[in-house]
Length: 353
Image (cartoon, rainbow, N blue to C red; front, top):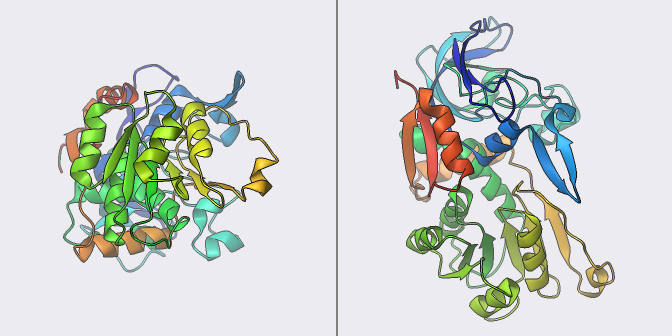
């Protein structure tokens, strides 16, 4: 198989010829047709996460090894089945759930693989959709997109379920109770679509980019806030008509975490999704005095993916703006995302797709 792989961190991706996997047991081999480019890929390419205070987490400490074909938002066409795989036929199109675990622990048994202590994520710990072929460990990790646009469906495997899972951590709320979304990129627009699909009306979008704020308004945000201004927390409070009870930080950097925390009302919750990096210093007495909640949210479950796809198939979920680029232009597309030059989502399209 051909792969556009990270061979050296922060160096251009290299086109490699790698052995095409031969599916064993319950494994399923798919030919990649579409693969979303996610901001997590930028961190993997860089090889580190910023922990703040000059500290970094090396991704090798998380079990990553190079060369690696990234890409965890995959739609593919079934090519071959292992001898113990059932329920699929060659030619079937499926969304690949990438957040697979060990497959044998109690967490995986409840389909909460993303919380498995021994993860084997596709596009992170094993080759993903920046390659012509992807190996899924079991048919249960493959979800039928039906008649959905496959380029849009690919994004549900990460950005879709990431915002879906985060939103479920703040709902239920009255539909006119403001939910604040920090970041109006691909995740932010996806979050607006999910909130609207769930019947929520009061959506406030925060971003430094006027272009992205405008995209958020077109997508259904009722108000927007310029995150590049001063006293951003006060601007958020003004936009919400009071301190908000729910903020979802899809950027999650030092600055965004600070103004999000400062904006929360008593009893409020800040759900942290993004991986931009940095640190947040929390005044400890305020946590109990104001009964605040800080909660991390990491991608989503296989159940989340099935539910989100069903919502989209029933016509309740608006598609986010997607632009496709040829698979061999993966590195150029990744750099566009790194530099903040993407509104909506970029999705790689295989030459044969």
